Amino acid sequence: MEFGVFSLTDVAGDTTVADRVRTVIDLGVHADEVGLDVFGVGEHHTPRFAVSSPAVVLSAIAARTTSIRLTSTVSVLSVLDPVRLYQDFAQLDLVAAGRAEVTVGRSAYAEPFGLFGVPIADYDAVFEEKLDLLVSLRDDEPVTWTGRYRPPLANAHVVPRLSRPLPVWVGVGGTPASATGAGRRGLPLSLALLGGTAARSRPLVDAYREAFVGRDRHAHTSIAGVSHFYVGPTSQQARETFYPYYRTYFADGRGVHLDRATFEQMAGPRGPLVVGSAAEVADKVSAQHEVLGVDRFLGQVDLGGLHTRLSLASMDRLAHDVVPQFS
Image 1: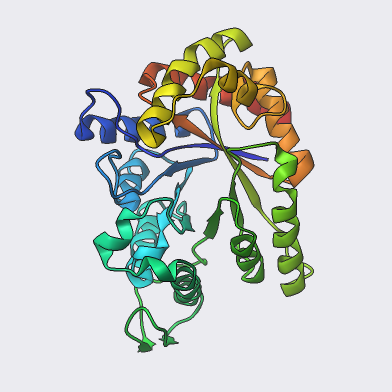
Image 2 (image 1 turned 90 degrees about the vertical axis):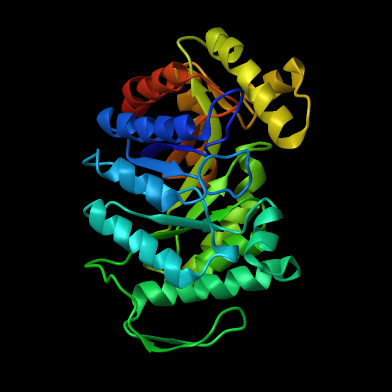
C-alpha cells in the first residue's frame, strides 16, 4: 500500500498566490522528509487556485527532495497539447531522477475550454483522442499520428526520451466510460472517492478491471483512492479543527453551506471524508483497500485555508501513526 498527499492549491482568505505556491512547495518537501510515497499538485485556470502549471511547481519540489514521487492531480489533458504535456513531465522526470508521474483528467470546470479554444461540446471525444496520443508519445519513437483536434505528426521525434515509460494515471470521478478507457489502455486509475460509500464505486472499479483484464490477463491493475482528509490527535479534535475549513471550502468553491450535521455524516464510518484519529483514518483506508482493491491512498492535505501547521501535523500523523498499520 502506498500513501501520499496532494494540494489543489485553492487560495482562501487574504493569502497571496505567491505565498500559496511557496506553501505548496514546503508541503511537498515535508512529505518527502516524513517518508510518504507520493506528492501531487493540481492544475486549475481560475483565480481561486494558485497553480496552472503543476510541472513547474513539482520541479521546484524535485530540487529539494530525494525519494518522493511527484505527480499532477490532475493535468487537464482535454485542453492541453499532449506533446507539450509529455515534454513537461518527461523533463520533470529528468530533474527528479525518475520520480515523475502524470495524472490526466477531463476538468470539473468549464473555464479552461474557452481559455484554450477547445469545444466543450466535444468534452469526451477530445479527451479520448488526446489520451491515445499521450500514450503513443510515451511508448513510440518516432510518432506518426492523425486526429481531429491537433495537427498530425509524421515520424516525429518528441524529446526528451526517458530510460523508462513515463507513468500515466487516469483521474476518474464517477464516469464508467472513463474507467473503462483507462483499463482498455492498461493505465492505472486514480479514483475520486468524495461522495457516498466505497461500495458505491465498486461497479466503476469492476468495469475498469474487466477492461484491463480483457487487454492483458497477466498485468496488475493499480488503483489510487483520492479523498479529502485530515488526521487529528483524537476523533473529536480532528472534526472540531477541520469542519470550519471544510465549510469554507464548500462555500468558496461551490457556493454551498455545509452544515455540521451533514459534515458529521460525511465523516462517519460509512461517509467519504477520511477525517478523524489515526485509527479512524486507517479504518477508512482499509475499507477502500478491501472493497475496491485500492493500493494507493492520496489525501488532499490542505483546503479551505487550512493553516499550514495543521497540514504538516496531519501529514506527520499519517506518516507516523497511520502508515505503520499497513506494514
